[in-house]
Image: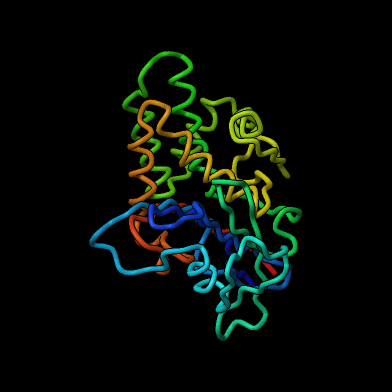
Length: 257
């Protein structure tokens, strides 16, 4: 039997929030059938007067995720709160909630230790690293690169992501996450971007880094717009609970069992 399982990561920011960034990184467990919503997901948000109402504090976001609210959710020790979904009693999640203002975070007990394949969430970084490389070389992003970034981010085009990955030196790009974002990743299969190994906390930090660093590089604002324009079949996770403009990135893993 083939079971589609999901790794989802959301990085969300709103000018309304005093605390900064939130991330939800559900990860599949052996024996589980699915994880929250669909695919690997990364999100950044900003104010939008036309958007549907959502939580205006990290406390409100955590309540939307877990059904519980505290005065300061980031004071909770990892593992203090469970995230579940109605009708999915066997669902097990790995998730992290990160405040980029001061680096505090909370999440599941294994949010900083258990690694899984990043799958298509890593495409946001490959896109950002392409912009970094252009800036470092003192040249604009080419039309072909711009098209590949848009296709990889908006439609999760694997061939486009592969071209970016190869041009960046394959695993040299994911290794640069340590220098550029302070996130050290590993891989279970060298030469394959999809097998980059990350934790839920890593995922939150990577997407927060993309959000913060992209504007420094040529085409960064366009990349953030791409992340806000993911095709409808790739939208999932806590997005409906978020205020303002939400950008995201998702990815599926199919496991035969």
